[in-house]
Image (cartoon, rainbow over all chains, first blue to last red; front, side, top):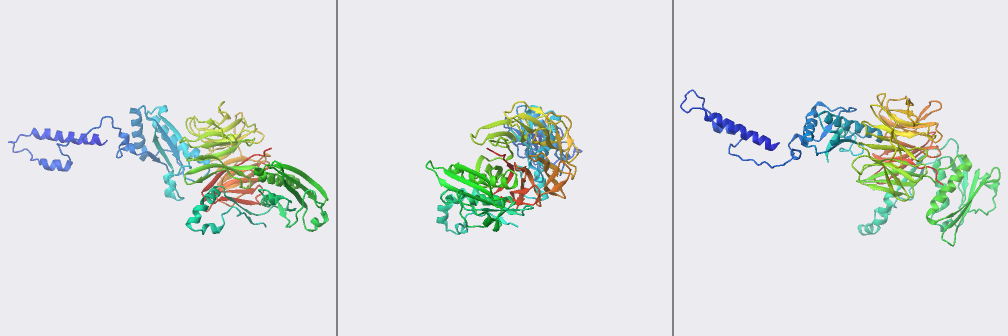
Length: 174
Length: 436
């Protein structure tokens, strides 16, 4: 993602230069452009050179949307909320273009209720994410939904903040 | 009212006051005792208590375990006996003065002897008398290995319990449960009194839903060691582990059929959690329930005619039953909007389950013959009920001081016991069967 946006900046700077070069210097009506100013607002150095690492994986970009691996659920809810759609879509896109990659969706619940019933509820959250990925074209063979139920809480404690943190599905790349 | 608290295994307080050097020396002994330490507390008594006297057995002071102190602790913990204090020492050969014991308030008297044999075993003899009828009720003798003296004592307590109540005793049965301390999970096996702890499985990932095989030799459980729930059966003696179910998705809630050949399990291989039946060697998978929601926590009825399970087909979780051959399921629970974890008593007449009412998760019993429902616990985070094999008690997991602990309640709700560890959590209990 970083390499792409850097490329875009370089590209737009180049286009800007091309546009400027077509302006005749003797045309009095031509608007006066401040090149230095344009460069400053873009924050781009037109002479900058950014490195592309061939084969680098956008999955490993800590700034990218693929770094988001958790989908949170409301209390007693097992549907993927709209705010997490972009995360699911980004992972679907990645998995569709990397057919060799596999993910395990790990569903979790808060600590209220029985061990086995919560395991089944965690599975419901994992299954919701799995289904969303498959609807976006990801192959069944690439994704497995499992549940940790209430057995592996990320947040300890018995308050709403801890419960909310644990009502979650994680996307774990294998 | 008996209020009994066992503290014998607790490290004496002065250990904690020792200086650093001494602690280092003592450290190993204290640490090794720590994980084995379960503590029992009892409250409440049975509707009627049978007064019984246990005389000291001559020779028992030379054995590794004091037989009569174990017998007395067992009988006291059951809540159905009143122990008549005495300082008598009577062997199985002593003449019994029935009138004297009757006057001292004892309806029954146990006597016995312990003698070391040439081969290192102990010859333990015991007799039980009815002081009212002036008659012998029972006589047993054991050739006990020194390390099995606790078991011998529990068997004597079982015999006293059975002869005086008409119900088989459960003191020689065992329990299995899961402890968590730091990052370590352990599946442990202990005597029904919480003593004699042995570790069956150690893991850095959760272990849940242990279920004891009908022959008492194996435990089925769910282990997360492969980063997902997978069902194993472990032979407790040989340590051999059999992979029963590792299908795509989650594999959980193993429950033995009474024949010990098959298990009902909960799998997600076809979508959400559903109930299946599978052979104990992992072959012959067959789907039993078929809904678009959750069907889980299967349990065979003791006669094998039904599989009880938890289902959310009506919205919230309720308990249903279905023939192990399939067909339509019948709803069993109607009170409350959240009923889970069905367990059927050995006589098939009572359903124990966990119900959430007003935010509390509590143990309930439903009389299947008349539909009467009774709340059996005062705690609020109850889970995983398990009947004693004689059907008189239910063990369950609960919380005490924010830590997982075990509790036992008599099925009439009168006698309550609490089992705690000093370190970490203890949960997921399963009561083992009667064993030869």
